[in-house]
Amino acid sequence: MAVVPAGLAPGTPKERFDYVLLYEKSVTNPSGVVDLPPVELETDERAEIVTAEVFWPSGQPEGKLIPYVDGDPFAGGSQVVLRVGHTSNIAPPADYLVFLGGNEPFTYREVFHFGKPRVADAFQNTTLKVKSKIGARIVTDGAVTGTVTVRFWGYKYKTEARLMAAYPFGVVSSPSVIYDPNTGRSIYISSKSVPVSFDTWDRLPGGQKQEKPIINPLIRYAINKNATTPNTPYDFRYETGNVATEDMNMYFDMTPERQRGLIAITHFGIISAANLKGWAINVNGELRPDKEWIPARTDYNPYHFGHVSPFIAVTGLNLWYPLRKLVDPVYIWREIGRVQIIDNGSSVAAGAVTVAIKGIQVIE
Picture (tube, helix red, strand yellow):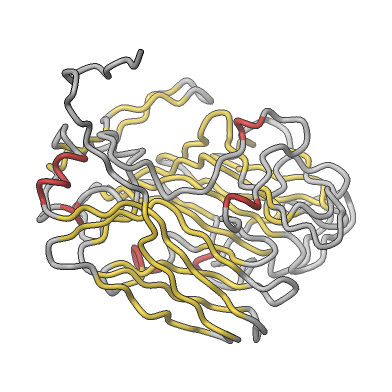
């Protein structure tokens, strides 16, 4: 006998919200900067992008994907930068994903998403909020032969009544205090409470027109531009020339004099290389998530992401690892945090290591 969900009388239909394909565009033989055509919403529609998937020709130069929301690059174009190709930080469609890497439980791997839709917690609800149009920009590392296809998936709400049915609590809010289990400290930030409506949609977390505190997903990758100096930590820092572009910067100065707010890194991934020993997130001079370097050797790398090779060496196998979820987020608050790697005493070649992070950023 069927059990009636709490709050529903027998025979009362439950609101249904279908996960749909919001955007699909393809380009053949892309090279350099390519802006894909936008998809327009109707004036009485709103949408939220939950995830992305990209088909990229095998064996071709890689690239990056920047979502466009309401005609502009999301959050200026450096907040969400997706690696596409062999070392994708979003991976291709879920049919190609594997969730066991090393010996960790499968729960430490998750299908990529920008945030969790239809929840009242502002730190979870960082889906990309769309009022009028969805688009995408591809930037390739070189000329690509073949067809690239970009898809964004999520939810579409036609009429404000449907939107409010999906958000019956009416308000998306964030806390003013967060407990950091890694340090035992309490983190104090500006709280946020935004009512949900058609008019306020792009002022919610993940929206293009938020008022401070701004809460957005932070998704980024970086490649070491230079070779490492033996036995010396290497920062993925743009200001020192250690990465090629500003959107690869993984040196976060969150001291009050520079930028007020918070970064919480929830997922991490690294592509290892010859002579690489390990990685860490250095926060205020301390290595995290452990007190030691996390292994990232070519024979053992529990945080490997992207294509399964070389750890599953089967020619032509189209399987991918998602980023690995950290047991607890690494918080950067009123301090400097930086992603670092270190070699085994011999230099790691320039361009050999790719790292990727996923999390949220609060700008006060």
